[in-house]
Image (cartoon, rainbow over all chains, first blue to last red; front, side, top):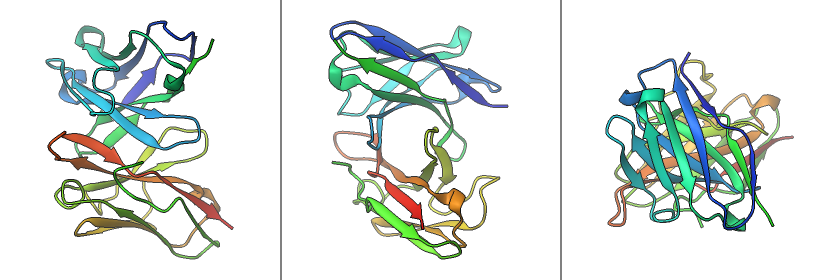
Length: 118
Length: 112
């Protein structure tokens, strides 16, 4: 079964750094892009960026370029989303999703809730 | 403000047919495929329609998609209570500041 499993919920203070993870299984991890999608409380989906795990080439949405870093470690089939200095406005659910043969995102991870509060 | 425009809400009674629209521009829907995702309450989104009108295996044929020019639509026939969810359209955007994926703001479907 193709699956993406994300790391658990995080509670952080403004200014702190954070890295969340997304582990792929059941398929060749280096054969498909991994995207990250933000969903703020009660709001819609926003594509943040993606990574090609085979060579770590990344592509960001203009809205998120410079605010987050996407990386991957193909040796452990894991992609990451990282912040160097969190803000309260980063409070959201973050999903990873695999780019599929259909061109769409399939499957999705279960989501990681990040709460940033002083 | 989302790049793709969807109505915030839609509703119907069991058995009815409802449609959800998605409007974009020449740099996204006008030149690329449209995808639809279903997000049931408290769960991760799920791919519902790909490449404008194709259904992944396991998606009932009650769900159908279409595209014309810079707009797309999702139709749900024989509405069921379990269809109550948020629906999002998405497309690749080839604008000068891109390329990148864009989503609609989402449509909350209520089954009355």
